[in-house]
Image: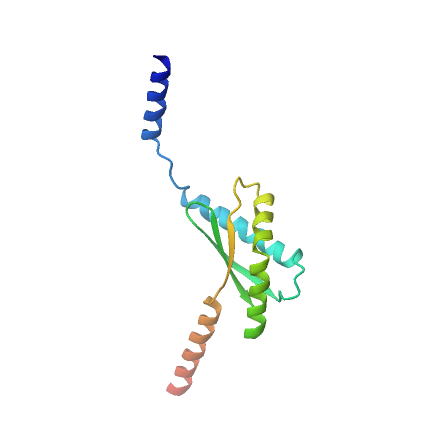
Length: 137
């Protein structure tokens, strides 16, 4: 009889307080911490010769905190960018493990490196605006 009451109380508790995604401020704070750690790892610990000059610009976390998309800008031509992204992709497991260890996360997010096209788009827009200004005057 007591056991049935206990199960009833527990089930009512979870109905009143369902498991929800973490608040947005926590996701943003964790994403910024992950960005800093990934930047330190890429600059200081990765010894892959394919990896060139990389800047970690942003980290986008999934709502369940299991996937981290790391946006990076790479200086150099297309061949350098491709080889750097290959090197980063091969080191993604190590980076994920190190981030989880350093931030003491229960579950380390799966890290995926993605090129950040924002800077390239800004340069293209600036060039177009400059061309418009020059042709108009």
